[in-house]
Image (tube, rainbow, N blue to C red; front, side):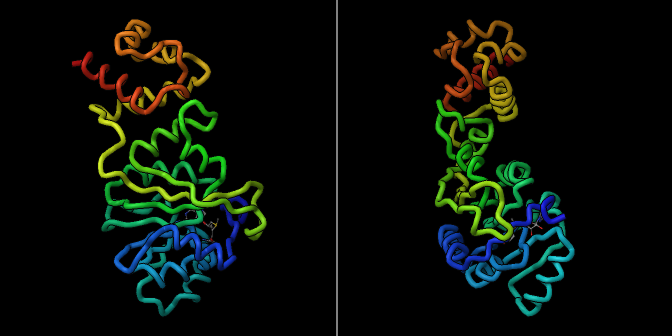
Length: 255
Ligand code: SAM
């Protein structure tokens, strides 16, 4: 059960303090913690924030949390799968969490589009962190990169080696601070289409962009040349601006 739920506890006070520090939470913030575990990070969060909502799926840990924090008025404990929590109903909020690794991506995809999410300071696998902050023309540049960078700016703050966790996970972790942009990184006419293009390009990242657009546009080569994009390029060589250019021109053609 422990392994399945990604239960690797971070109990080192110095590291927990650094996480809270880089999260820049303050006494006017509503903070959501995903996977509160035994409450070591929670303890620091309730000192700093106006209110904390700590979500924990495991009933045994939830009982520990209830007992540990029974008198804390600014803490709401929720025994639920974090993927099922109604974040839309919250006031503006920040997430600070040591995310259970098996749900890293679903959690990011669940939260990233929310307008009431101000920031996320999350501990996750180094490899995922590097994909989040990746630049074009690198191996780490991926669908996740574009989705996160479209809505937010992301900054890798520091790494945490496995031995700081109990039990230690197999991989190194990293703390990433993700801040919602006031407006998305690029102007996109039709977001659904934009993400369809990006998804299609990265699902066949070895293929040229011309090839992966075949299912979306009739004559991809001519279409790309027309907007000044080399049809022989692959997804990882295209910037977020290039993807916006492609999807915006497709939107015009469809009208
Ligand atoms: N915050 C604690 C810490 O830093 O030591 C625990 C972090 S541990 C990596 C992840 C925690 O998330 C575990 O306590 C686990 O039970 C909980 N968890 C796993 N899946 C969850 C889910 N779907 N929803 C909410 N909590 C979950």
